[in-house]
Image (cartoon, rainbow, N blue to C red; front, side, top):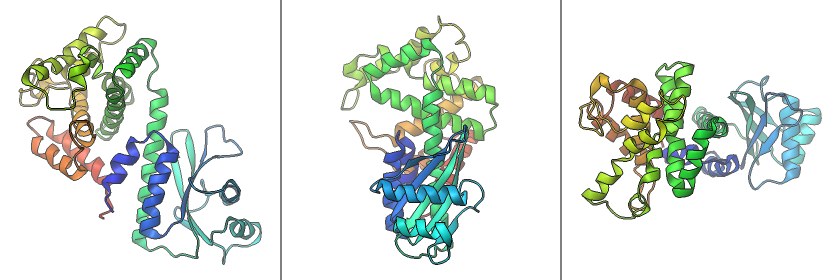
Length: 345
C-alpha cells in the first residue's frame, strides 16, 4: 500500500463521502474490512448524528447508528473497541445481527466542535492484530484531518473584500484557488506545530490564502499554458507577488498580510524574488508559507507535469533546506509528513 495516497488524496478531498470511499478501498484490501462508516455529532449535541458511508443501505446505517449511540463509541468506549455478535447481548446483539456484520471496531473522531465515531465493519468475527489496529488508527487520523480541512474552508473567508477578490480568482483559475486553500491549510498545520500563537495563526491563514492573488493579472495564455514556459513568460509569472501586493495594499487592515503576498518566493540564500531578501530578513510567517507553497505545488498534478511522489518531495525539501527554505521549519514540516505516513507499506 502506498501511504502517500493517504496524505495527498484524502487531504485534497473536499468531500467526506469521497474520502470514505478511498479509505474504504484501502481498508478492504489491507484488513478485510467491508465498510467504513463515520458518525459525527456537533457542538449542539444533536440527538441524531450525521452519518457517512458508501455502498451501504440506509437500513444497515440505522442499525450501526443505534449501536454507536447505545455504546457511546463517541466517548465512553475505549479507542479501538471491538464489538462481536458472539459477545454482545440484548438489543446490541439484535442490532448487530440486523446489520449483517459479525464484528465492528470503533475509533473516536475529535476535532473542534465536532466529535464522533469511525466504525470498521467486518462480515465475519475478526480479531485485528496490532499492526492492523495501527492502520485503522491511521485512517482515523486522516479522517480527522479531512474534517478539519472542510471546517477550515467553511470559515476561512470572513471579510467581504477578500471574498470578492477570491471569487474573481475562482472564475479565472479554479486550480489556483484550490492551491491557495491547500497552502493555507498546510501553513496552518506547520505554524501550529512550530508554536505560532493563535492570533498569528489567523494572520498566517489569511496571508497564505491570498498569497497568489496577483495571478489575477497574469494573462490566461501564460497562467494556463500546458507546456514549459519560455524565459519571457516566466518573467511575467514572477510579477505576481508584486501585483498581489499592489492589489491588496489599499484595502483596510491588510498590512499584516502583505509580507506573505509579496515575499513568498524569497529564498533564505537571497536568490529569490522580487526583492532578494535573505535569512532573518524574511519574516517567519513568510518562511512558513514558502514551504507550504512548494509542497503543494510539487504534490499537485498540472496539465504540464504529473505530481511528484511524497517521498520525492521530502527529498527535495531536505535538499533545499537552508538554501531556499528555513532549515528548522523544513524539519518540523517533515515531521508532520512522517506522522501522516507512519505506516510503511
